[in-house]
Length: 424
Image (tube, rainbow, N blue to C red; front, side, top):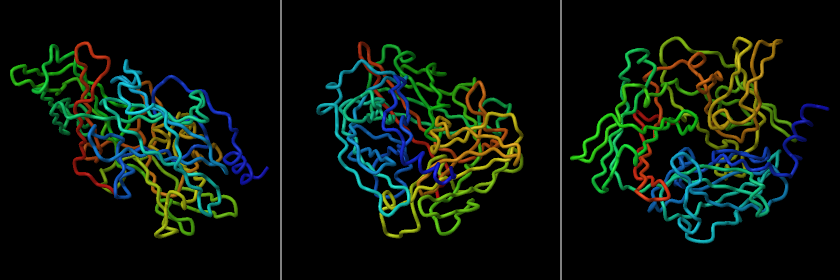
């Protein structure tokens, strides 16, 4: 069987049976034919799709869910909201405690792709407003059967009950301080009477919209009950992140030409094949500044100017290569692989070429990524990517509060840190 035919069979004639929904409340795609899942606050600019799925409880901007179904015919998809606590476990709230209507919504907005080699159906769903702050899971399933889940996505709704300040500083630890970034946080709770700030307040920090290396701070370093302020400036590294390096990227906005870091594009009658330039480890050397998307991706095409990239962009079967020593478990990291959660994130070694490789079906656009070893503490990118304090990263600080006798954690403060922000 030819490679082209195998690709088409795999992506166009996937089994219709859904994958059983796990009880783990996380970002996950359960069906292989569901592609390009994004959830973000709706904005006027093209790059709004890069923003984290966080909105204020009184924000006029809705969160928008976008995804593609690689299929010929539309399905009946429904969505439901699940309220979670600070640890992303289902909270004690009932549906009618946070939902303004019956908590099951039909996804009725969809469009067919236009003249694309791999046909797909593009779905759009504005997330309904809620009445309670906190963590939420958006669950999408088929045929109104909650056991036929196709995807889940996390999002957060905050209320400005606490005043929160945060800053990126050099770490207090002297060892390896040129490769680390520390986040200091101060919380003012003057509008709330706290019985025990050390148990009722939790602070979570995440880097570049990642959950796998997020830091949950429970114990403050300084508490001033007269000023009603809490400071988190730990000396033990509990709010310290590896700074990493600027992300690698591949420009797939063209099919008739090779974009940046693309070695080859083959346009065939029923499929488009692309190969990225081989990557090499870069742990040493001097930090080099350039624009990136901090691990995210943006759907866009330059082949059809003025059109709608969501339905006119082609899907490209793209292969990535990394030249590295054999015998290591290496993953491709970034939003394009769910930060290492998708099966395609695993790099496979070919002794004939001396390279690792993996192939992904990607919609035209700009994609950021890095590589990391699998370790006991998660993914270790330093041996491949290097780490420099000067690296531009995005951080979010989320402050949760549990009132006495309450059944849920309120998200009472949110800060988005983007020092020296640089985007393409």
